[in-house]
Length: 250
Length: 235
Ligand SMILES: Nc1ncnc2c1ncn2[C@@H]1O[C@H](COP(=O)(O)OP(=O)(O)OP(=O)(O)O)[C@@H](O)[C@H]1O
Ligand SMILES: [Mg+2]
Image (tube, rainbow over all chains, first blue to last red; front, side, top):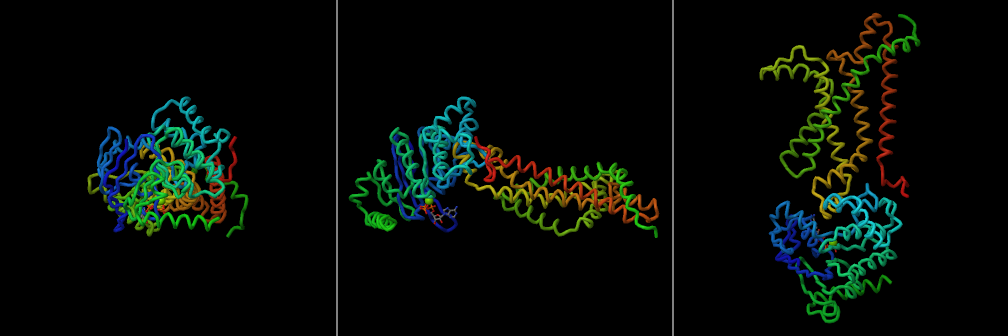
């Protein structure tokens, strides 16, 4: 369904992505792990052109394009097939929860207002915010804001949702509610690419885990392969480090 | 010299007020033309086109270093010369025109900074979120960024407006008859006997206008601040 080949990206003199390949099939839950600065965010941002890659190509269903010189139209097409959930939510501050979710429907997809409202309410109900339609982002908790962010992504029925550390800006007691919503989406068969440090989510929900370091994919496989018998030394070191930090934090 | 005559202040205010449209027209014209010009300057400053960006910054820097009264005379004497060289005769053109041109040149520089900082005050993540759900860049700007930037800009815009109005009092130096110009004519009519009274009357008028502008935009800001922290309007 979605395949990215040989993606390169340099910021100034800093080579952040050095030839990454990623393939996502319909219904996949791909979790991307990796230490800070390994290029995970940059990779996701290049997929929907929030960042322009220097090299590489993208195939998305019938669309084939070079990332570097994709036309404005192609970019918009791909953006309509994808949705993004941001680390710090990025809700529209001047709009209510309901309006946040409706925006992509009424404005980008020209869905009639009444119909869009029904879809948006459904999406908010699904993330457990049926009683918060009229609230502005500033009146919601972090966990609630992120759930609006997820509803906003789900409502446009994208073929794949890209999550960039959706829980890492949240207080520990709010992480659960967001992960719960994501698990539910996975169960429904929504295709997702998730960057996260939540090992339990990777372990329980992913059908594929990709480990990145230094701008390359070091290793990928099923959660079982990666967590129980990693082939690469760097992968097991990373997992040890994460687990140790995790133990300390308890 | 005559004694101070406070009642004279009240007596001449109605006469001064009849020239208020000139003062306000000058401010409005400047906000309109200077505002549009300032918008383009701000656009050039936030875009990543190095040449236009540099030009806009140089323009802002240079015009900000020129006192308004100097600019007023430069335009008043310079613009007709300039236009004459391309065959346009400016004889008989209203002084108000030169005033609006002068203050638009200066105001654009100030207001472009107001626009620029208001634009930058809105986290770029919201723009990214908008395009990520399929909005075009233009839609993201018009529907998400601009409405919030306007709210952010209101206090600085209000200040720029008040400053402009006060600077505008210099327009009489090239012969514009606004409230200050008329005040000077009244002073002349009484051979300078009521100078202090006239200026006090003008001060009172400027004071009232400033308060009205502040109150008005304060109310507008409050009305537009949907979703801001201090408001709890949700159902
Ligand atoms: N817009 C940018 N300009 C310059 N450098 C950038 C930019 N965005 C990212 N980088 C650099 O690219 C590198 C990779 O960043 P990226 O955010 O992709 O890492 P990450 O794997 O998501 O890390 P984290 O786990 O901390 O979120 C970092 O060294 C970062 O400083
Ligand atoms: Mg990141």
